[in-house]
Image (tube, rainbow, N blue to C red):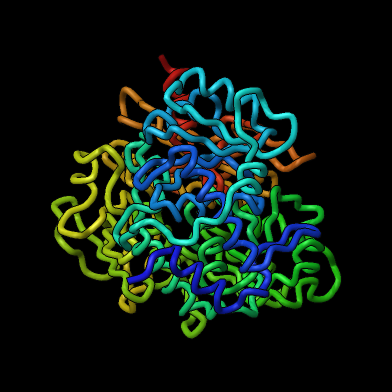
Length: 507
């Protein structure tokens, strides 16, 4: 069986002159890309990197991200993509947890990295991209240019770990999901067979590549199937449509935030004539936003559901099937989904329970955490911590994360139901619902609200509005106003941060 490295070599041999990566005026063909990865692999080997070592990457969406990724894989080492929005303490934690001795980063993150390394002393080698790098560190471009290509890859097995992707998991604690070459390739190929990606496509690399969804549906999807990936180092809502049009984007892996930001875009008819498909992942998207986007850009939006531990993609809408409102489509081909109760018994259609998944893209386990792995993987099945149900034709409906469900006086409250009501108020731009401790009812409903610019409202007004549309017990008792909500890379609201803030306030 093949590995990610051997498959990139196959692509480069098949379409050597095809553009693999482009960013602004930069173009890198597959032959040059492969050569760069082989040269960097040799340079890293000379620095002592060997099979099984963890090498951390802290880079924006630039060409050096895929080059570094495949160079590390070429050695049989393991890629650890890190979020550049971490603070120094968080970055140090992940470096220590994965045991990385090498960090490849950009000079723009210099201050953050140097602070983090005081807390992660085992990370011995710093490799910087850019000019004016700190003393006693290594220049990435020089390392590539000065190294001859490493022609043959290490003795890599498809079941070897390729990437460790960190996820908060069910408990909110950081776990490193170990993804094998085989698992990543399987999900990529399932996606390719569904979305028909080939050499004619140009894929938008907008979602940060440290996110598993972007790795699978942009980076590996393009490089394993000969497409072109257009890299966007930052998301600029004012110019993104023009940039995508100039690049000829045909496939857009996106977060709900990207979709929402593009809806008010240019007024000209079909401003993205090449865009045939958008795959939206990472949270609920209002049906009116979907319809507006599809009408504006004359394209199709397929909503999807997944999680890091299952290879990022579990279910999505299909071309050939009617999209059921509120659902995230049906499980991918080869992926099984069950709904189970608290005792692990499989439930019938339309019965609410916990979502369990069995997928060829499943993680091997959590790095260095065998106990947590055993808790999450049972007989080849992953319990997700998400609550939902399947209908009679296997459409999947996501209700809420298990830990986010509010239990008030014995009643179950799904936060997204309350949020939908708040978002229907013309002054509310964003809303997040959490449960806060209550001495009488166990939990009470707390809302954090972001208002539209130049709009106003009050706590009393929004509570009354909710009570007009919801049972009183589901309506918020508390409404707090904020300028923004904490979110992850795909725009999903991080309720655990809101809960931690309220816990500290209540202490």
